[in-house]
Image (cartoon, rainbow, N blue to C red):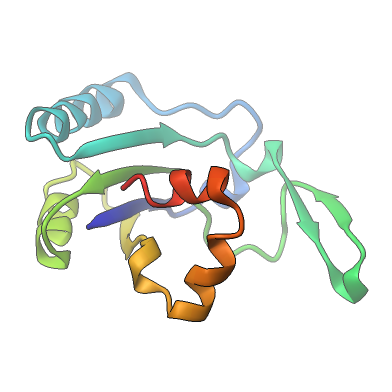
Length: 139
């Protein structure tokens, strides 16, 4: 089972462009990341620049509309993620609980939808695109 662990740091939605974490926080996080890697559960991870450097594309009335960050209405945003592969939801939560997060950070744990999770009619549609199906069923 694959899970994304999503880092949600309070206040990051208002961070200035180029805001970076403190070196001591990165050092602690790197030790944690190393433990994920040594356990063989880490598939990918990345930190994200603040929303002030991003953009949103919305589709009201079916037409794309680009809004540059920051996004004033945002209450929380992602600061980064880990993609892990474990045996259960409980194991994913256990890994998230070990993270050296600060008091203003939350980790949301979400299971990735696997090809086999979808009903037959959805799987049939995906099979029309064999080059993409391989990417979707590689896990």
